[in-house]
Image (cartoon, rainbow, N blue to C red; front, side, top):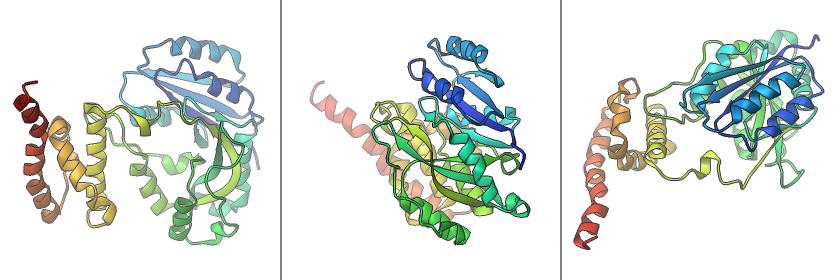
Length: 308
């Protein structure tokens, strides 16, 4: 098998203190047929200067794209539009690939017969953290790739832990994250789940990536703000749209309604994301919106009564 071109892409926003991990791990890759597409998502630190210096220090192509800050999903769309590789790998701006990471991912292609390869959209590897050399999550069972698509995806969720994947550029052609106005974080599941429903995945216990925890800046530990509420409310709305009669979707009703008042500007511009063909859910939302609207004013009334 000839070595395919692999496009590694990184979306960066103000990571001047951590981006060296990406640089060092890319320089150390034993697989050489690579390019690096980096999207600077409106950074305000000196990360762009570091990127320009990095480009002069490596033997592989580095494409640097600059855009106004819009969130990782918009940066990912721009990166995919500019990747030239047959396969794509996402490397976050504060993480690193192990030296043989890309080589191991490309090696997984040999596990699938050539005439079956178009049926697969990703080849999944495992991760460690900076705290331990042990795999994050449980190992995949030996027979996972013998299971049907839905059962294998269920096992993938059950083993837990972060993963990294070699993505088929052919499968991703024309697939892009929605970019709703006012939202700066769209969950990856918005795309991953439809792709998982259409294509197979190949699962491996090979350790590919090291990511860093307990640094206080990841997306699951954001400070509460109007923006983070807007992001969450849009995510809840998507859950309701796509899982409206499942437990996970119904659990989103209250957070959606409570947060809607604070972020209604998102939906004044976001009519394409309104819930379709579900009078029951829309009625329930309307009924819940009234108490949630009142709930929004309770703290202000309480402070006024206290004379604060």
